[in-house]
Image (cartoon, rainbow, N blue to C red; front, side, top):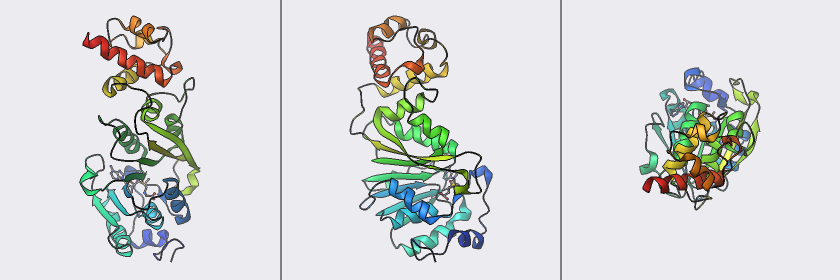
Length: 283
Ligand code: SAM
C-alpha cells in the first residue's frame, strides 16, 4: 500500500501488468507518488474541477490528481497495456476517473468534461509541444481550460517562459505569454523517471488570462511570429518580406526598426505589428 492512497506501489503495478517502458511512446514513468502528488499540487486547488490528463501511463500522476481532490479526471492514453492498471484506480475512486484509449492528438475531449477544467500531463515531449500550441491558439479566448500544468524537457520549459534578448525567446514564449501567465514551478533530474531520460525536465504552469495581454488578430500574430523566428538571425525586414509588400513601413509605424532581429522584439511590439499587418491588408 502506498502513502497517498490505499493502492499498491507503482513498481508492483508495473511488474504485475508487465508495463515495460516503450521508447516509441516516450514512456518515462514517475513512480514516486509523493512526487506525483506534489506535481498535482502545482496545478492549484483541484477540488471542484475536472482535470484532463493526457498520457496517464500506469497512473502515477493520475493517483496524485485524485488524491489531491480533483472532482473528475479524464485520462487519454494511447497504450492499451495501461488500461487494466488504470481500471484499478477507477475502482478505488468510484465515479471520479474515466479513461479513453487513443491518441490525444486525434481525440476531442470536450464532450466528456465539465468546466472548470484544468489540464495536467507528463507527456512525450513532441506530443506535449504540439498539444501546447493547440491549447494556446484557439480562435476564441478564454479557452476551455483555466490552467495547463505540463512536464517538458527543461530546455522547452525555458523557451516557454523566455524573455526578449535571450536565445530561448521565440514562438513558444510569444504564444504562451500573450494569453497566459506562465512559470516554471518544478525542475526534475533525469533520475526522477523510470527509465531516466537523457535530460532534465521541468513542470510549467500556465494560467489562462481572461483576455490576451495585448490586442492582436491570433492567426496573423501566429504567422508573423513563425516567419520572424524561422529566420531568427535575419533582420526583420528580410525575414518578414513575404508578409506584406510594405513591411518596412509597417515595422517603422509600430516602432520596430526594420534592421532589428526577432529575438530583440518584445511581445507588445509583435502584437502591434500583427494589428498593423491586418489593417494594411484590409486597406
Ligand atoms: N503520466 C505517466 C507518468 O507520469 O508516469 C506517464 C508519462 S510517459 C512520459 C507518457 C505517456 O503518454 C505514456 O503512458 C504514453 O503511452 C502516453 N502517450 C504517448 N503518446 C500519446 C498520445 N499521442 N496520446 C495519448 N497518450 C500518449
